[in-house]
Length: 88
Image 1 (cartoon, rainbow, N blue to C red):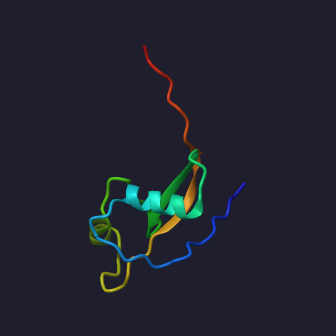
Image 2 (image 1 turned 180 degrees about the horizontal axis):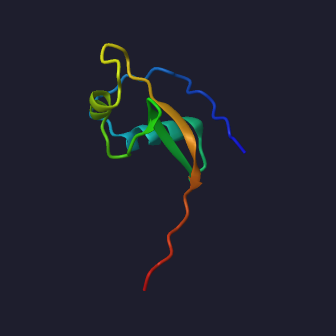
């Protein structure tokens, strides 16, 4: 079953290029009041971007229109956060 997420109140976010995807995910999660078990995924031009990447890095390597504002899309991943089994 597909879950439709609401749009952000502010669809344009101006921020530092040093911002990491993990920090942006936290902002989006807070704005949408998502359940912690839901895995948020950010995408640029259809590719999922990793949490450790900065916005500057994504703009230089994934965004194909350097003169335009970068557009990132978000969605819930099919995966849910689960605790990993402990190894002894």
